[in-house]
Image (cartoon, rainbow, N blue to C red):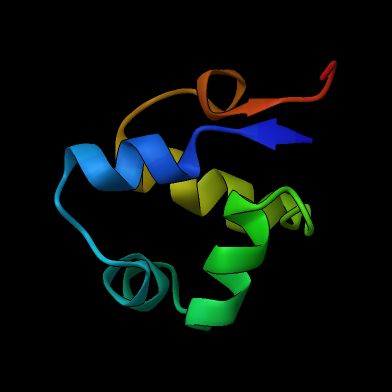
Length: 64
C-alpha cells in the first residue's frame, strides 16, 4: 500500500525516530512503512491520521 509517511514527516522536520516515538513504534517500523514493505495495522493508521491531522485516505492509497 502506497503512503505519504516520508513526505508528511519531512514537512514537519521529523526524523524517523521522532515519528516512531509519537506513534509508539520502532524506527524500523517507520522505515518499513515508508519503503512500502509493511502495511500498518488499522489502529496504527488511525493514530497516524490523528497525528498528521488528516483522513487516513489522504495518507494511505490502497489502489497503488
